[in-house]
Amino acid sequence: MWRSRLSCSSPSVCCNCPHWSCTKKSSRCSRATPSWSWKKTARRPGRCHSTAPAKPPRPRPPQTPTPQGSDGFEGPDALSEVAASDFGSTERDDWENGTERDDFDGIRELPSTSASGSNAAGDDDDFDPQERRRSALSLSDHLREQLPGLRLSAGDAAAVHVLIESLNEDGYLTDSLEDIAEPLMAGMDDEEDRDELMSRLRCALLWLQRLDPLGVGARSLSECLSLQLRAQAPSPAREVALCICQDHLELLAKRDIKKLMSATGADEEVLRQAQTLIVACEPKPGRPFADAESHIIVPDVIVQRSGRALKVTLNPDVMPKLRINDLYAAALRGGKQGGGSGLSTRLQEARWFMKNIQQRFDTILRVSKAIVERQKAFFTHGEIAMKPLVLREIADELGLHESTISRVTTAKYMATPGGTYELKYFFGSSLSTEAGGNASSTAVRALIKQMIGAEDPAKPLSDSTLSHMLEEQGIQVARRTVAKYRESLKIAPANLRKAL
Image (cartoon, rainbow, N blue to C red):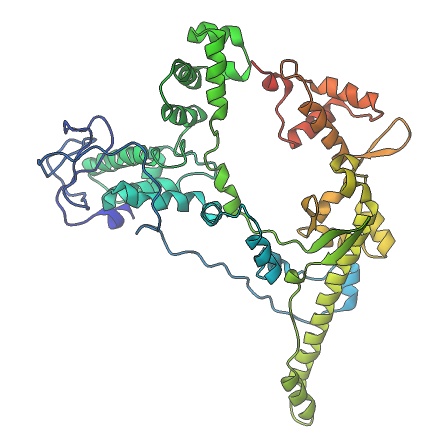
């Protein structure tokens, strides 16, 4: 509860508020103690009150460097465990028919600790331990690490901590302060206490929005961009950019130059400079930290070039090192006259389990080799040379059930000279061509991306134009299909790609 975390015996203390409405004449209010209370005092809600009328402290600079270390408000690190499943009897037919349980999928989530992985990191001249540490932090961890540098009281830091926990993955505060305060007000009957809590949260929001990355804690795209622009040096272009972000983002999205010039009173040159400033801002401050929330991908299969051929091997880091203890196995064999039939059954089940695990990886390798053989052109020319491929083709070639191929290619990854891909990536639907052949949907997406990348920014290609261009190359694709592929590539429509 808010009361239990933030209350103390101190009857009064300044809320350390960065707001301009502070009753102190200094640039910021002073602190008397690092704690605060909900006890009633003769003060007006929403105001800062100081118990120390001494000379105010020197104002702090607006930018606070990120301190090293952790703060007192960060909870213990969560420890993730892979729960071991109960293994019963398994049969060889389960694997062939695609009905076996996949009990080792969690293995690929563990980072590689092999010597080869360590050497690879050590040979990288650009390896930066600090940058790697930063990229491994989540957004909330990164924000918490900065709290000690603000030198906030315990109550203020806890209020900022509550807002940090309310941020979404993009760094936005999607819930209103009233909604955030509602569960914290449970049991608060005094109206003054409620006003005090809201005042705390409003002050905490201002502190949060001063942290790195700039724009964090914004409640809208307009506010996010404005926070980043205000941190830049004053200039006519910045003022126009602020005006656009606050009132005319829709006109900017439509690339309506005339209306923007009329609304802002700026000439075309200043307007272009303002657009450059806006484009340089990060619309999603939490995006650089998104990778920290995802699992580390360790490939199951490695593809390497060996002359003109491609060599496909299993990654030894994902293969469990399982063996049966010879001492216990010998003891079971020597004690058959006793009542050890139950243990003998468990020993046989362990042997079946190890055999099925080995067969599982053998199947992954066979499927991977079949994929590489069918998609040789991809490894030479890239996505644009991808061929249409369906699960049934590989299943028929290897004599396996189609569901087995589906499971083997899901959440299994292949490291190639051009990057790491999920095995399912190499499968895709086909589109007919004028020559009577088929084109892979992946290749068509790559072709659309290539066409858009080469377009004139002043005259971007519409979906209809792209459809006609593909038809000229012998690929029949409807306009709606082009739009679907474009959206899957996260490419904006033509009217939003047009340059000012």
